[in-house]
Image (cartoon, rainbow, N blue to C red):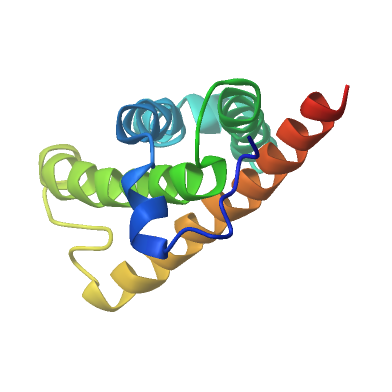
Amino acid sequence: MTSTHPESTLGQRLRRVNLPLAAVLAAVALVRPLFSITDATDALGRPGTPLVLTVLISVIWILAAGLGRVREPLLTLVTAGVLYALATIALSGVLSPILDGELQGPLAKPVSIVPLILFNAFWGAVCGLCATWLRGVRERN
């Protein structure tokens, strides 16, 4: 059985998305804003720390979907990217008034919400393509 099902409709493929895994992977990615909130990013250095965190998160996503028994690695990681974007929007909406005294982030600039979601869906898609490739390599061996 291959990881993609070309004969399936999009609706059928979406029903095979591993939502629990996507949610866990989105939560893993929240380490990036956590580092920023705690000033660990500044302490460890910019731009290196965000880049290293992004690479590590991406590797975790790719390995989880590529080596696990995920039926739809591409769509699962796109979903993880979208869930991560939604979680960062919510986190920013709750924490910025507490930490900064005023609303900041995407909710303060609603025009940034759609690009944020699209960018993180794209990040998930790139990781999903890598996971699909990894699964193919693994299945051939």
